[in-house]
Image (tube, rainbow, N blue to C red):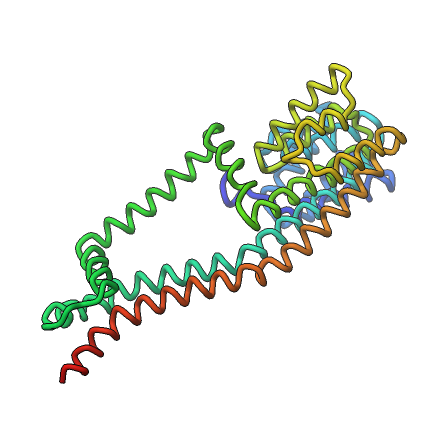
Length: 348
């Protein structure tokens, strides 16, 4: 899928809500597609809807129109298909719009939580590279000509400066290549599973990652149940929607256990490192009371609030660590440059 063929999340939200309104008011699908296609500003969405109008008129099921486009994932298509088969497409489209908006807000919260440390780390890296390439080489000849014993910080700095001066382009190019290689390595399932397992154990971010996954599971599960999907199909869709493979694998194993007659709460209980006691307890209560959808709604609100609260607190937690990192970096540079000058001055 090319950059120019992408359909933004907000465009999908507006589309499904407008489509729901048109269907509820009695408009046929083909006419609704034609109307929304004419109004769409995104060329990719416009072309999809105008093609979809023709396909629906030829007897193609609605969900298949979206299956042929990479912009729409399994969750989107499942909502459409469930509503199409049950005759509640207008209601399912509302549920779908709610899910897309919640998921988009959740991603924004996670992104904003990590924005501050990303900016600091990138800035520190750029500052270090700038000093190494443009400033420090001018000091090398001065320090090398000094008839004094240089401190270890200055020796390290001179070594690093010489390394960057002679092999700087190769180091930068090598770093870029390593990042690209790591990106493609993450496409390999075995590597992705290993990284996801580590990410759940990283201090601070591990807990946030876990709560993020549980929020996805609860929110999507709650909405899918409202749309009328059975447990097995709901869990299957959720397993493809979570972003951490540890949760995806656990959900697929849970599906197998449930199909063999194990209670859902008992199957979930086998993964205490992924699902906390509060999650298991609420699932068990909803299962026994026959209000599983309501229990998932409660969990969705609970973990959603926890993610929001943790993302707000995250900069406060990380800020002292980043300040220490920056302080050590500045202290190292200062000691490497100031100490030799101080020794010369003292000798004079």
